[in-house]
Length: 153
Image 1 (cartoon, rainbow, N blue to C red):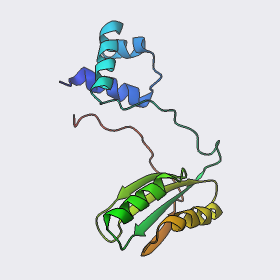
Image 2 (cartoon, rainbow, N blue to C red):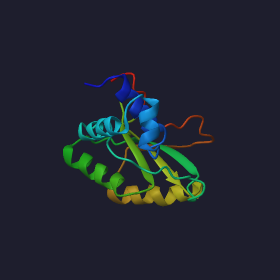
Image 3 (spheres, one colour):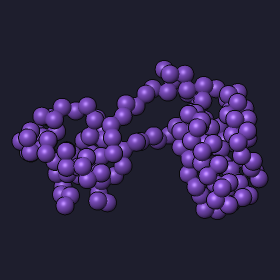
């Protein structure tokens, strides 16, 4: 059973996964050992899937974001498996979502520059054909939050 303290712990860890356990315990009014047990339980139950470092995209030379809308035209299982394998094998494709509506997928690409898009485009087309593709260059990131709201638990 998740209670308000668990939700608070999850929110704090999303904001800073390196926050010392003693600080988290103090903020949620628990002893360090009780807080440690809760964090362990949240991991065990799958609420915490892992801990990652968020890298500065400019410092690692990947400042360009391109969104690629894709119509596959094909929906057979073997085609979809090939498509999933192809996009999974390209590290610059950082997100892929299957959609409803006029397009089948949206891909988010993290690239060193706009020109590099052509390289990724050709890599994808080596493995799968598309009915239609439309690329959109992000001009500005207005909001970027890896944190999820915890009030729906």
